Image 1 (tube, rainbow, N blue to C red):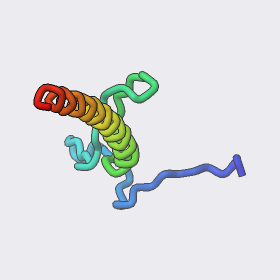
Image 2: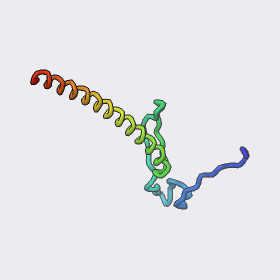
Image 3: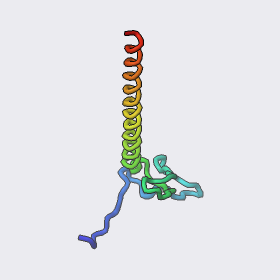
Image 4: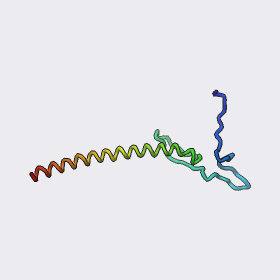
Length: 95
């Protein structure tokens, strides 16, 4: 099966994301340039359809949310410990 060519087609029926027609560039509104670094630290500067960027961006956002949640949980644990210490100190001095 390795000799079968895979051709990606546009679900909107476009033959190209951008093309020159009558001296003007016709560009799909969903053609988006993304610049940045991936999780491995590799730089990227690519044009692609906004629809095809979605799985990548969703995965990135999910990773960021996990990191944020871990930070919040850590901060909550520290605050809990400090609150317990404060309550114990108050109980010592008032009792």
